[in-house]
Amino acid sequence: MSTHEDLREAAIEEMKLVESLDRGSLAAWQLEQLNEQLAHAYANSPFYNRLRCGQDLPDRLLDYDSLTALPFTTKENLRDEYPFGFLAVPCRAVSRYGESTGTSGRSTSSFITYEDWIRGNIWVEESFRHYFTYDDTAFIAIPYELTFASYDIDRAFERLGVTIVATGTLNQICPFDRLVQMMRELHPTCLVCTPTRALRLFHMLTDQGYDPRDVGLRKLLYVGETCSPSKLRKIAEAWDIELITAYGSTETNSLALQCRFGRSHLSEGRYYFEIVDPDSGKRVPPGEAGEIVLTSLRSKAMPLVRYRTGDLGIAGDAPCTCGSPRRTLQHLGRISEAVEAGGITISKLALEEVILSTPGTGVYYAAGERDGALEVCVEVLPDAGANIYRDVQDAILGFFRIHAVVKPVPRHILTAAMDRMLKPGSLSLDDIEQTESATV
Image 1: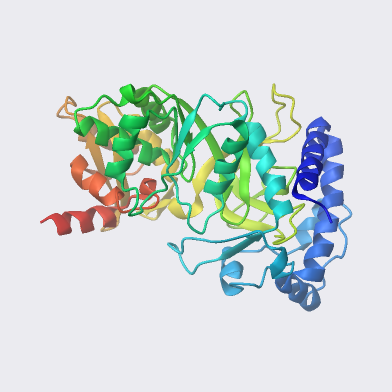
Image 2: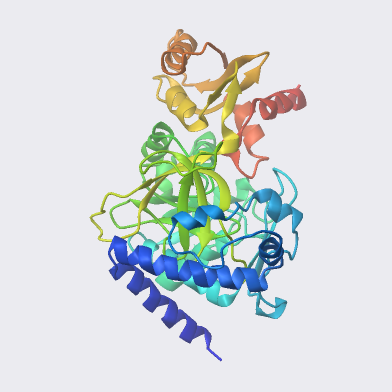
């Protein structure tokens, strides 16, 4: 029986192997792992076993084109099979169990063995090695309950000698007021949270008459939210910090991690990725945006076959200076976050860039459809000119060819709404209206 240290050493050797391959050799290795994973899923996962028995599916893939003969796995499948329908090992082999938040529907369950866990965590550790050291103190201000991400980050930091302060978020033990006070007293060098939460903490400090830069923060590891370049620039400039990101999901842990040159590389040692048209399900040409679809390569507890993540992205084939054969990812946010207005679908990320790149705008906003029109509520800076709202309207019209109603909203309304949210970057017009009603 393998010890934990044996499994770790084997995982490290596999990581080194993957990084030593060229693109062609990596593709051949992935195809071999895909076939082993399919055999495991068909034999041991209740969901995939039923799927295999009920449909004429290939037992073995001869190439990647034959993967398209397999049906997609969806979030709804995971919900329908809650809790054990995707579990492919005995319960005694499960090292960690997690669940989705359930904010967008019924909860889903996730399982990993220790081998699954360490296979993913060594990649996180290797990525973080370029950015974090034993000289760092990190506040991890994301949920620890029923989630893998915080522990994944926590353990990687631990291996690197980082001092960890596990504050969590939206909890009674460490509410935001206490978190801010601790930042003033302990002077962390690193903060782990969503980008919007980092902005909120910055403004909580300024509201107390404290210069946030006196905290000594040098790095923000932002997770759980995709941001426009303008928003990220405003965060970096406000705090005067370096921004690092990691992309993952409840079901998979990390899916893309930064190399030392700041490019996010897909976790192609653990997953095979496809980029497909969200409507047709067909693969898009290289370099085009589409939905990120993944198939696990090495998962013991919970293999997934052609799982539709609901995230948009662009996979890049251009070689990276770091030398990794793995493709890069430009994450473009959630499909469900698109704004529908006047019969037009607008990318939330693109809309955010247009709004926040307009001179005079702050960092908080919300947008949606009201009475068939696009409505935008935006924070503006105190010294913004009288034409700021017209400027935002013109910018939206020029980019999207759609007229928008742009309204002011006080920061205290925006922040009061966000303080109740797990993902404050998903602030909606409904959230603002509910908060305004509650404060009347």
